[in-house]
Image (cartoon, rainbow over all chains, first blue to last red; front, side, top):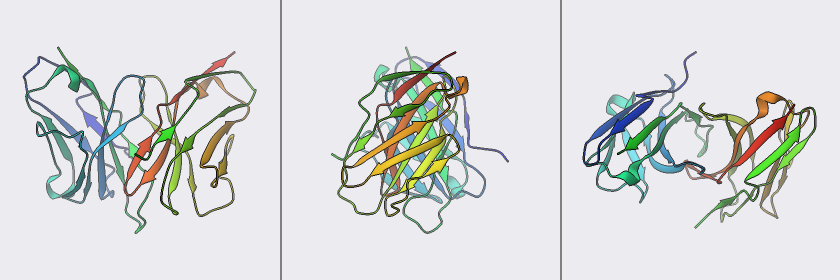
Amino acid sequence: DTGVSQNPRHKITKRGQNVTFRCDPISEHNRLYWYRQTLGQGPEFLTYFQNEAQLEKSRLLSDRFSAERPKGSFSTLEIQRTEQGDSAMYLCASSLDWGSATDTQYFGPGTRLTVL
Amino acid sequence: AQTVTQSQPEMSVQEAETVTLSCTYDTSESDYYLFWYKQPPSRQMILVIRQEAYKQQNATENRFSVNFQKAAKSFSLKISDSQLGDAAMYFCARSNDYKLSFGAGTTVTVRA
């Protein structure tokens, strides 16, 4: 039984560069979420997918951020023209839709982004 | 804004003793879910316990139990018989439609 996996685990980049992160959810989970966590804080919601459809995006997700989930499987989060303020841990979570509005989310280990 | 507040940035407990972490939240919904997640240093977040707001009975998972006071919008976590492996950051979270809103976390240290 594999959990949520994320790659890479760490990414160091220079300001202005583009970066892309990947999340592989638990295989039967049809919901996928992205959160951002800064040091000493709780995660903040970024965006959410139901299968391949992106259903909600936070105001935190500026135009430089884009997320996709082709075919409802893995997801990618791309940040264009990175800024130092983008430095954070990016967490992915997945859940199985039982027909309830809220089901338990299972988190991946995160990708730590450092923008120099 | 609907918020989750954890008023204790840090808590320390002696091994085998009990510690209680507090959490209050704001919501306009009548049906929602509450969670406690544990995040060990440099490790991924794992679910500790979950409470459905429509259930009056407090959830329990082994050494972990909650005190859910719906009217007061309070959701505290009690860790009994604390173990060294309980040392971690603990986050309280509330469901908000499909997403979770988290508190700032409480760091728990366990003294041997």
